[in-house]
Image 1 (tube, rainbow, N blue to C red):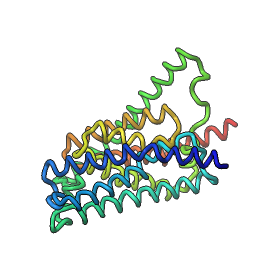
Image 2 (image 1 turned 135 degrees about the vertical axis):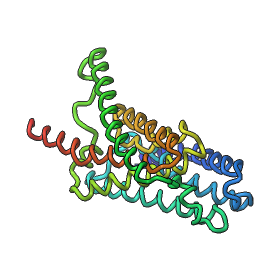
Image 3 (image 1 turned 45 degrees about the vertical axis):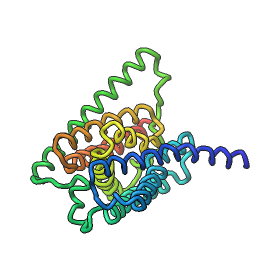
Image 4 (image 1 turned 60 degrees about the horizontal axis):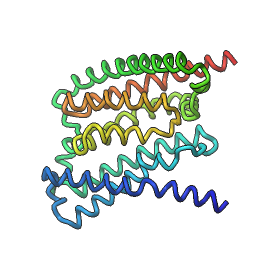
Length: 273
């Protein structure tokens, strides 16, 4: 028992240094561009860095500590509860950041700070719907090509025969829960990783953190898919200059997966069994 506690403790020590480094980097970039002026004060800057480091620690980097650990039981209920809790924590972190570190009237800059300053929202929604469908189809093709290549080189035993536990848990949820998960993931994750982080730390680091936040899938193939999707969403943010198209594309992709593909695949597996 003591050995298990020690191993878990060591796991949670690993993300501390990168979390602090990322918090420092974001604040440095923000102050360097003199936005927002409130962070020019050393005390406020230090507290803001602590907030960000804490979020990175319990959020994306915390996934490192969970690698290889079994999901708690029952997996469906516990994981879904964790997902919505994670989205809530991200939202609160963004609200606290804006209220604490922005200009004297922070809410006037909220849309700009988080990348929601779309001048033509209907156009952004249309672009997002189109690219969400293209991203789903393109990612499916790439992953299928990678899987076929692996099978041709190393045989059928390399790839797992059953989907990851988290995928099964998502597919088993009621329809309304799956809709809520797709929408909340699109809004919250894109607002944070693309709208908030990408302009401050760049596409590479924001994509890396987005990928780390999805390591709980426990499947290299699915993690590769996450990387590809993150680059698509990052490209949309860079191209459109706001996060709305990426939000819609992300929600469309997750909607196709959660409302159609995963349940259909699960039904087919049960019928075949």
